[in-house]
Amino acid sequence: MKIGMLTGLWYVSETAKVIESLRRVAALGFHYVDLHGVFHAGPAHLSMAGRRAVGAEMAALGLEPRNYVLHAPKNLASASSVEVDECLEYLQEGIDLALTWGIHQLMLNAGQWAYGVSRNEAWQKAVQFIQQVCDYAAPREMYVAIESEPYVWYLINDVASTVKMLEDVNRPNLTTLLDLGHLALAREGKSDIRKLQDTIIHAHFSDHSATQHTNQVIGSGITQTADYLAMLRDAGVDGRIKKFGYDELVISFELGFPGDTIPDPDRWVRESLDHVLRVAPYVTLA
Image 1: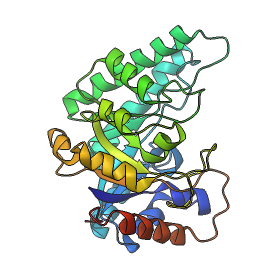
Image 2 (image 1 turned 90 degrees about the vertical axis):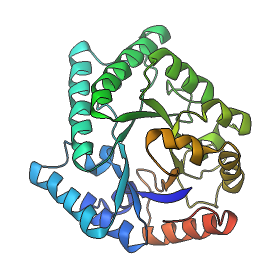
Image 3 (image 1 turned 45 degrees about the vertical axis):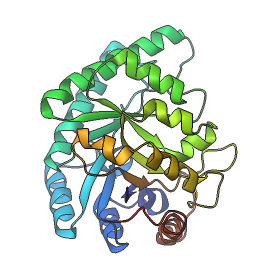
Image 4 (image 1 turned 120 degrees about the vertical axis):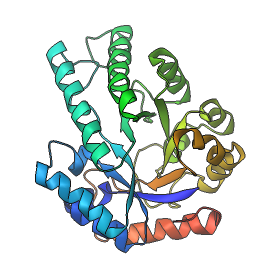
């Protein structure tokens, strides 16, 4: 298992552009990077020249982009048919952009339950949307990953709903991104991980207070990171992930939540890295 870094921390703390964030990622010693398309690396944020510059910068810095986070710009459950089409076009553009950077997996959020929309209707709209994204991605050799969010208003908010979405979408290129801190907030463990072990393509380190999604320094909250890493190791994820074309699972730090005041984001990274390397020395940067 390898450690990566998500670029969003520097956007949250300093409203940094993606290029500056990439430079900070490299300066801190990372090889693997996740690009945060929701915050500052989406098609809406970058001109054509800017998109080329991001690719050139990653190559110059020796960074290997592994995962692209890009959600639909509207909540799928409550979006009109016109808005759903616009969301699909946006994610299709995102897939094409990711491929120019050498990224072969896109993580999206399935959306939230909405007032005035039945739960069945909301779920089916999300299923149909994700099917369309997967169908566009498949011939381009792109995987789509869904992630459980740890609040009840999200359609996918635990392992059970993740499994249900995987089954209902029923596409071979639909996978899961496993967030260790989200598992902790949902009070899920080894048996839950095993339900997803064949679909895990990527993971995130995160840590939180007992009842809130805070994305704080790893090791300062409730997430038992060492235990979750041991569970992933026991599940043989490094071997299972080879079917996606990777040698090992990459787990990227997701630090900082919009609205946070973070005077020294680099320190947050160093402290998080120190914690992981101390509790799980078999997980490395490169």
